[in-house]
Length: 117
Length: 116
View 1: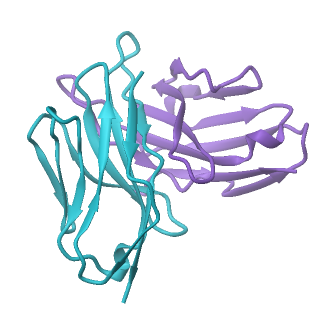
View 2: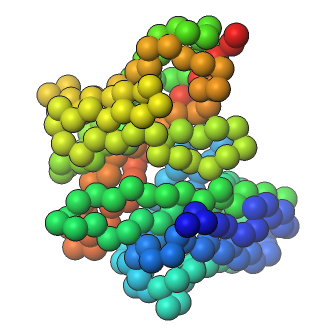
């Protein structure tokens, strides 16, 4: 088990450019989450997939953000027309489906740090 | 909506001191509660969790007890080490109807520095 991986680890871009991040969850984990963490704050939920279906999106996810999880494996998060306020750490987490409706632990990747100039 | 409030930092302690980081929550359902830790330059790691009232989560000498009556989940350790220096996040997971998401709601984090 290699854990959750994210690429790139760092991304610097100019305002107005598009960026795409990738997350590879732990194999066989059905659930995948994206969070955003700004300096001095806790992570905030962005969106959630169960297999390939995107089942929930936060109000934080504006029209410029889109996420996909083709074939229920890796996921991508794209930000179009980046703004300086998008500068943050973008975290991905995965978890298996529990039995009997129990909560399952989310395992986090190292994150992608985005800086928009 | 759900929220988590945790003790403001930073907290600086001498090695072998007793640690308490307070955490309280509000939730519409019956949440599970977590402490995550973020060491410098690393990602979030689960430290401990509790899924029902009066459960005690423990790991690496850290403990926290799920107190439903006071809606609290305070983190404690009897004797901290320099290697415990990190940012600690309290979080809850509340099953949302329909989508079945277990999204985590985090506190702002408490930075702990332990000095020799």
